[in-house]
Image 1: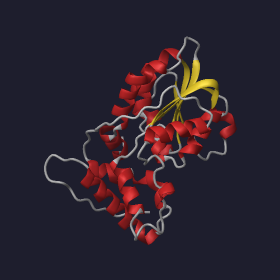
Image 2 (image 1 turned 60 degrees about the vertical axis):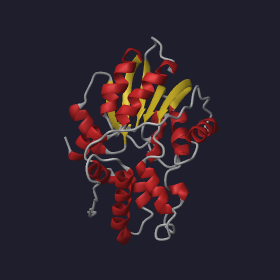
Image 3 (image 1 turned 90 degrees about the vertical axis):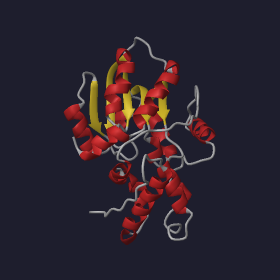
Image 4 (image 1 turned 30 degrees about the vertical axis):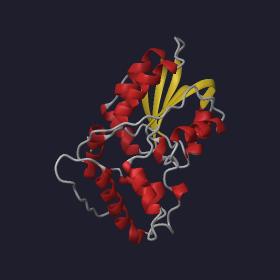
Amino acid sequence: MSKFNTLWTRTSGATKVTTSSLENYGHLLKLNPHKKEILHSVCVNYTITKNILFPSIKDHAKQVLAIDKRKDFIDLANEINKVDKVEYQVFDTMGSDDFENMENRFGQIFSTCIAEWLVPNRLLLKRCHEMLKPGNQIFVVILTNTAIQQSFYEQAEEKGWKPYLSKKTIFETYTKNPQHYFEKLLKENNFKPDICQSANTTVDGENSPDMLHLIWPMYEQFWNCIPDKMKEDFVEENVNRCLKKMTYVGEPKKYSMSLQK
């Protein structure tokens, strides 16, 4: 297993948040004996597909398709997380040219702790609506106001970074009222929310500096705005801001890094 995926599995709050969300709101899912084709959209943390999502829906699934645009994630999922009725496939929800094969296909769509990375959220929900068969459901778990989001938002307000970043290109989910924001967004995309609930949570993790470094490739929608000669400084500042917002046992850590092409 790659270092990235090892650390992601150990430190990601997605596992905890997805589990608690299914425990608290899974009863709202309209599952029935008629087998459905189910989509797990953008399965970065692919262990969620196998260990959390699939066990809760396996009796109602004809097939589960778990997608991500990164081939290395999908290759690893196929290598170590194979399970009957689950297929892992490279697919870019936000920009694929092969979208016609996904339209009106799925009886259920799950999106777990990834929408916060996909800007604009409006496009993600539009695509989910297009992939969903009429009259069916999506189940979306989204993280808001995390240390990473706060740090980006702060940098976008500073003189040195403001010319390159706007609030709209940071995290649309960074808002004082995420519940209202997301419910409004769902309705704008022709969904009828059964529930839209926000909750505070804390996440325990190991190796946070390494983790923040390794998720850097996921920042592409933001750092494309930063001039190449400034990217290293931008990331180092962002990571160290995040570390200051986290709680540690022992002395706080400072982190430095260099970017490689």
